[in-house]
Image 1 (cartoon, rainbow, N blue to C red):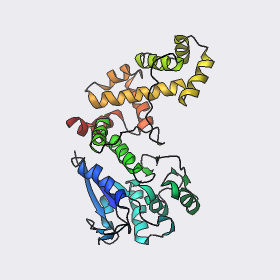
Image 2 (image 1 turned 90 degrees about the vertical axis):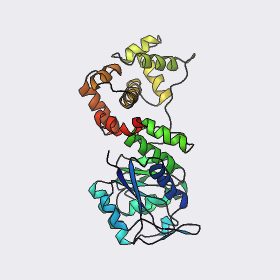
Image 3 (image 1 turned 180 degrees about the vertical axis):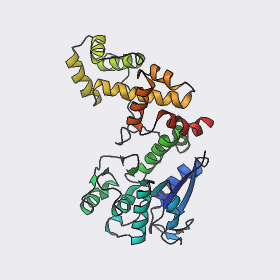
Image 4 (image 1 turned 120 degrees about the vertical axis):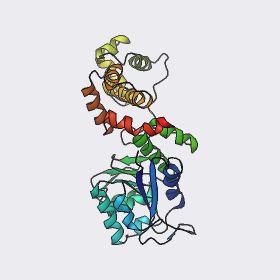
Length: 317
């Protein structure tokens, strides 16, 4: 598998932990999958916030071959205007289709390049108001650790960058690879709820709670064609009451929750087995391969086959 070229852009007064996170996660922990290089405006050493300096691998021309561009945070981001050549290089990489990522205050650089226009994003909590005021075309949500789209991702302050990088690993290489690296860096690997804050969606432990019992049964009966009526009857509750209580407890309707579990199970089977798509579709209750492909792509923006191919690295370990 050809390695994924990832360029970390170092701006003056780069925050030391912010630029170290992607270097550690991608270059040190997953060198088989990623070719990681650093770039500065002119290829010269970059001052680091707090003292010392860092020597990059080259200049902004490195962005021309990047599949992913990461901009770590930098000091006084809210009050600085970047050199035009930096803004143009970031905008050009975005237009070419490179995945654009910011850590902490690096969001200001992406916003200045127009990359964040029309998106809901995040940054360090202390800078959210400044980002929103300076770039009115951007929606800023302080409550999120990670926000954006598959093509453009932003993260909150400092260690939220680890969550973001683990999410990228999960997307690129699969859950096992992300879990392996998360253990190496002593960080819980958390699955994304869409592109919202990374909070694991755990099933409520079985017990007296009627919704917990319904969830447990739904997981065991996942391969069947379940309706909300089936779920409600299982716990002897009126259908409308069950729907209302389920949504109040989980935040989503019953069928949406079940669909998420089916996609999660499909990911596990794609990553851990060689089962054909047809068998996976039946086992997780999505019926036909065509329906699995449609639902899987809608949820992940990649096909089941592509997810399995990307996961080859994780399985090889």
